[in-house]
Each structure stands twice: as structure tokens, then as C-alpha cells.
Amino acid sequence: MHVKILGSGAGGGFPQWNCACQNCRAQRAGTFSGKPRTQLQVALSADGQSWVLLNASPDIRFQINQTPELYPGGGNRGTPISSVVLTSAELDQILGLLVLREFQPFRVYATRSVLKILREDNSLFAVLNRVSDQVSWIEIAAGGIFSIQGSASGSGALHFRPVSVEPHFPTYVSEKRCSELCEHEATLGLIVEDDLNERLAYFPSIPRIDDSLLKQLASAKVILVDGTFWSDDELIQVRGEGPTARQIGHVPMSGEDGSLQQLRGLAAEKKIFVHINNTNPVLNESSDEFRQVREAGWEVAEDGWGLTL
Image (cartoon, rainbow, N blue to C red; front, side):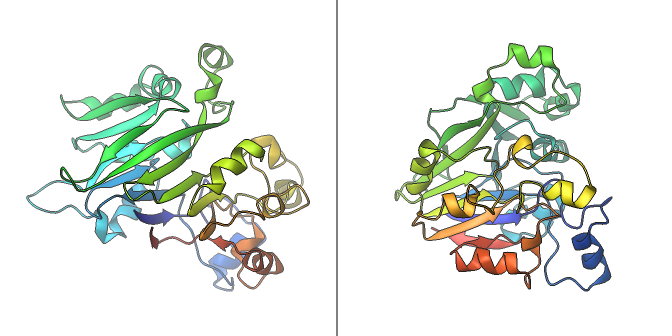
């Protein structure tokens, strides 16, 4: 399995366009000991030829143009991107679909509830079906398994097992509409396996860590997991007000009940934090927080990283 981390930041990227926190100011001034990030985007391939996007970030056009493996090839138009797997209807994970509107055939996999939000509630996404055979919308279910074939028959496939992790839909979805949807279809993590039984866990949003999640993660050789915030009150420290990390669905890294402590027993070959918020001190590679993450055997994802399982 080939893995490309095209973007590693949380919503808004780093530096965030309207943020003047210490991290963002230092990054703009050129005095920051760390790298900028675009918004989280991961691509997978069974054969290195046909690629599957995990969600579609608002930065997807830039990210594709920074990734030779995703360049079009042969003829005037085309793409090695065959499919997009959506883990939620959050704007940071769906807006890139509108960038991919250039009459290019591909498949979108999502739960029934997410498909209803996109196709029934938001007319903008009709731009993806202006001609016949443009985008195919395929329903998936938490707990089920679906497979996406490589570029040609016999070239291998990726097998996806969606895992329900969060019962809350995005805030732009009305309460009435939410009551009509299935809460277990709101947000997914993914266990992805190739034909050689190499396994990747992708959980960019973790509202809680329990025995069930630990069991899912323990089976993976590579883990890409929620690293949005360092501390539970991080936004409050920066803004003087706001929600805690847990209130918006993210277990922070630090503390006795943080992810570094609760995930300490995992023996994966690669353990990588993704979806790093612009306020997170681990972005600063000279910080004590970054050192703690590295000493615990974890890595902080950067844009452009590539892995092969």
C-alpha cells in the first residue's frame, strides 16, 4: 500500500488566514522552527497507479499540483484519482469535491446520511453531475467492508472497513435534519487493508479513546490519528474564550487522559499525528511539546510525506 500525506493541518491550515496567534505570527515572520501545513489530505494506492483520496480538502488543487503521482497522464485530460472516500460531511473534508468538478469521472463513497446532506440538502454539489457518468455516489456503512480495485484487473485492491466514531453532524446541518439522519453515520474512522494484509488506521477525529478504538488501532501497521490540539483548553488559552478540545470532538495529546498517554501501548511501526491545529505547540520543532511527542515514539505529520506498507 502506498500512502501520501498531501496535507497535515487542521481546518484553515497553518498559518491560518485570519489568525495572529504566536505560532502564526512567527511563521509569517520567518522566525518559526516549523513548517507550514495545508489542510489534511491523504491519498492511498494499492499499485502506485490508481489513487484513492481520503476526503477532499479545500486545498486539493494545490496538493495535487505538488504531487507528481497525481498528475494527469495520457491524452489531453485524465487523472489517476479513481475515488474519494468521505469520513464525514465536515466542510474541511468535502469542499474539495467542488474543485474536482471538471467533468472528470470518479466515485465518491460515503454513508447514506452524508450522501443525503450533500446530494439532497446542498444544490452546489449538483455541479458534479452536470453530465451523465460524471460522478458516481456509492453508499457505505459503518461496520461493513468495501473494496476499491487498482488500475487494472489483478493489480491489487484496497479494502476499507469504516468505523463509527462520532454521533454528531456538522453545525451547518439543522437540528431537524439531524433528527432525520443516523447518528452512527456522522463521522467515520477507516481501517484500510491491502491484498498483502498490510493495514493502515485513519482516524483524523477522535472524540474519545475506549477499548473498542484501541482494539481497532492495535491491528494496524501504520496509524494516522487525531493530533488537533495539545491541551484541552488550548483555544481558550489563545483566544481567551471558546470551546474545549473535547467539546468539539478531539481528545488532546497531553494529560493523563490525553492521547499520548492512552495510546502509549500501541506497537504500530509508524504512529503519526495528523490534523494539527495552527495553535498546537507541537508545530514548533524546538518546543518541549514536540520533544515529548517524539520521545513517546510518535511523529507529527508534514505535507508531502510518503509511506509504503
